[in-house]
Length: 109
Length: 115
Image (cartoon, rainbow over all chains, first blue to last red; front, side, top):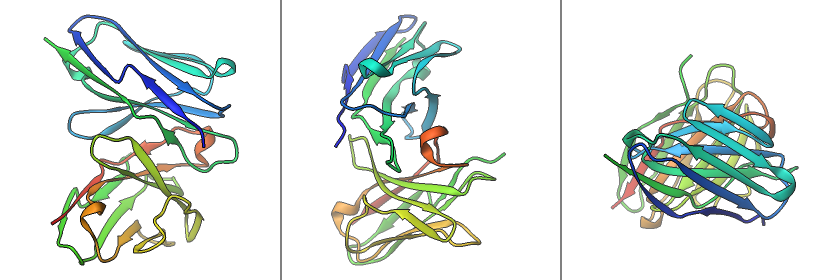
């Protein structure tokens, strides 16, 4: 099956710092999404980004499908950004998203 | 527009009992997906349903687990004769069409604890 690797597994930031989270995948995909799971367990869809670049406030994401990776940028981090960030991909013909193991982000004041 | 609604939020069952988890998709969404998250792990796909049809159940355990999405009412994930290993968070997601070209929106999950 497809492999999805996220790095780093854990990240601790001072409030106000910037960060880049990476997602590598082992096969071509036609769907890639980034999710944030907050400390209360809620899953929020951040980006639907099979290719290209998108921005939403302090967050932006870039997917280079030909090189099989995606990056999530968090600028001016806030304590509310803490949680686990998941990358999830879908191959053509599949009926579901395959999730990576996540990056656990802790933002300290 | 209400989001994906799951209930109950927390469910405690003793070994051998049945667990029924409910999911109401977002308005206008006819595709429902169930995922399971074990502690400290990512989400794992279980089943994909459209109204009255199971499209893909390749992630469902072969025994004790079943899912339905009737013409009227919520989607139900049913676990019979629960065991401790079933303790997990179960998330439901919905989309207006197939996942590959639309974002998935998840509910807040049901946390099942088997004692």
